[in-house]
Length: 128
Length: 486
Image (cartoon, rainbow over all chains, first blue to last red; front, side, top):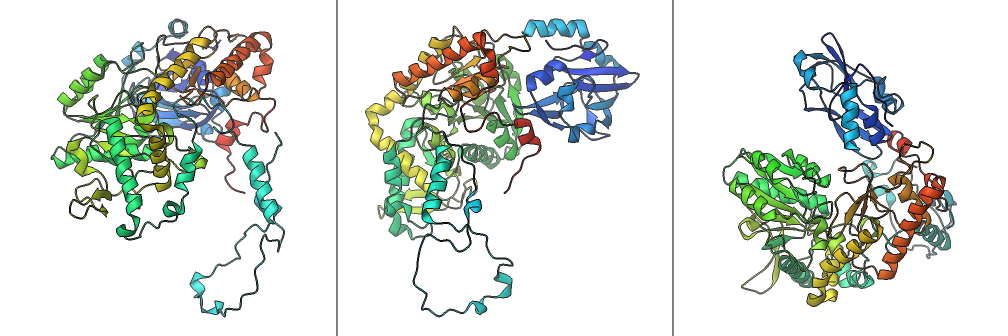
């Protein structure tokens, strides 16, 4: 069974968001990393790049496939997790510890359309 | 199977050769070679005897698995048997020793074969003209899209820069479109696995260059709404591109031209029995409807109405030049031979027999493997893993990868796995019309054995393969730390 961390928000494309004031930390869920298999490369945007909700902001490549990452919120990238450049497998080891980017949100209300842990669990159960 | 992994350089012994020549009595002066053209260091060529060289390559070839070794149900690849007569015809010195810059007069036979093969491909697909120059399927896609762009640009319609690609498409489609400078827009599939026409319609505006379709699609399903799709795309001013990857299902029965496609490519290494990869390069001829044929890339082969001779000519309005000469001619020879040896009557049986083989395997296994889209398939189909995969039990769970690896132990090449991405445990099987019922039965038996083992002895699958020269390679390490040279 995939782990679902409490206190995070989730998108239907399996990204998680941790909101702290205006800053959103974004990663992929344990379900996503499990479905992908061993991750070998993470394509991330650069600092100061703009990301737009529901639009592609990067990609994760595993031994099975390459999958686009979709921004769960809009805003400006303030930091990317450079550790993933040399160790992309961190996403497999701890999906909720290994974040991908931090974004300064431009519209806080966008988080309202995301799911909480309970809703995300229901969403996953429905898919199975 | 004997494990063998030596490089020919490791066998090299200084001064060892496989020949003996008399000492040269011709005078030559190596000093006359300009310094700038001399090697800085001597070439490191392997020095081996003839038996060493022969044994080396035979041992390496024994490590391989190909259609000459056994059943190869690699979905989406049409791994049909490659008849030996193809090789024999292609290796006749009259063809194999031609030089691409020979005068047209001296290569009339080769040009006739090029011309006739183009004509036959037109008959089989309903297109008006074919170029045989592209070197592979994706190269054909790029050529076809260049024709599509040239068409819009030649009409002064410069805003058509979007191309619609279904979510079930082969990865080459969006890749070719991106290389061609087009922006890819995805159209969704219905739960039944075909293009969702309701999702398609809002995408069609005056910025759409066209749509790329594979029919039957990646799930082996015929796109039954093709007429509606054709009407709406054409009404919006877009063109229809047919990816010929799955043409084997329709060969001799249905023609893309009759379905309304404007441009298409064929994979001679799939549908027309020429080898894949190492057995000889690919070939991706591109065909167009009558109104687009002036846009085919240069050079083209034409039969002169005055002299009756074939000639190689430039195509001034064409979509540029996409190959140095006339494509992979040896491959064209093999496809030509295949069509000629199959004959007009039998070519009509290829599609139906490939469909029959796929449905036979699917129906014989669907009680043990999940079939996400039930019903009749075309030449291939997709399972979504085992019905009983011990899911949730960390020590006993069996994945599609484990099933595929175990198949190697049982003497079969694995199907395509984890593609299409529409399902998490995809197993994509394409048996081809060249296989006997006995071969299909043996494969079905192996798949049933594996399903039983998954319940009784899952570790056997999880640690497979057990009797291949290489066990499970570390794919993560291979992708992150590849060693690319000796």
